[in-house]
Amino acid sequence: MIAVLDASAAIDVLLRKGDVNFLLSNIKAADIVIAPEIYISEISNAAWKYNKLANFSREESISLAEDGIHLIDKYIPVIELWKEALRESMNFNHPVYDFLYVICARRNDAILLTKDVKMKKISKKLKIRIL
Image (cartoon, rainbow, N blue to C red; front, side):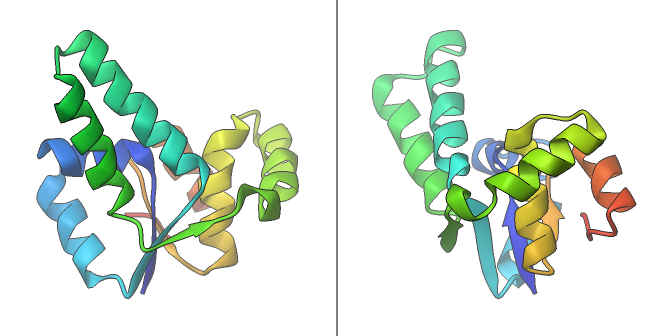
């Protein structure tokens, strides 16, 4: 099984909150975990927010980002996904950065691991497997 992990789900795993056990079991069950390159920016931005809003130290925030980056086995270049993601984002009136994950899952016949409710609904419409 191939899994696409988005940053929202990764943060739950890293902070051990929400459906962490469910997410971890699916990450471990996957043969490979992939994500579009934008994941690195999103996980880094989340680490920055925890530094600013939750008083994480600089070291804690950097560690959070590094741990999140290491959850992914392979990064898919955004240059390979952007046009299809843009088209679908216009079709569904939803941001391109989320569609990069959706398209990544569709192209790789992967399961999408996300907490984003709207992404889940869109993925169902596109017949993309979600957990």
